[in-house]
Amino acid sequence: MSLDPAYLEYARRYRGMDHDLYPWSKQSERAPIVWPAGKGVAVALFVNLEWFPITPSDTPFRAPGRRTVDSVQPER
Image 1 (cartoon, helix red, strand yellow):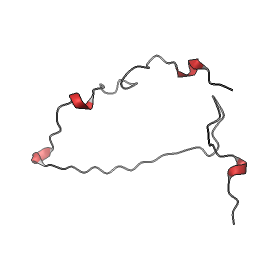
Image 2 (tube, helix red, strand yellow):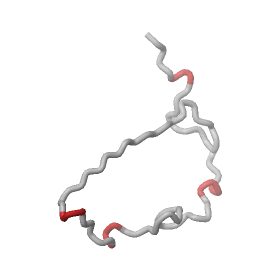
Image 3 (tube, helix red, strand yellow):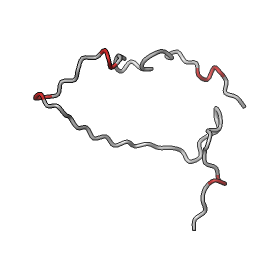
């Protein structure tokens, strides 16, 4: 089973972001960052929350390496 080429075609496929929330620009073309009070370092803490289905659907194709009932380790 192969993936239909039309699956990767969509109207907003171009260089940059695929939304209009903010304009896209190359980092090398942006103005330097100036921190408040002339400080040299800023710290930002981020918590990354992700969710992955244990048994994803097989559409449009079966994900490589996906878990199946046979690959689940039995409890000991």
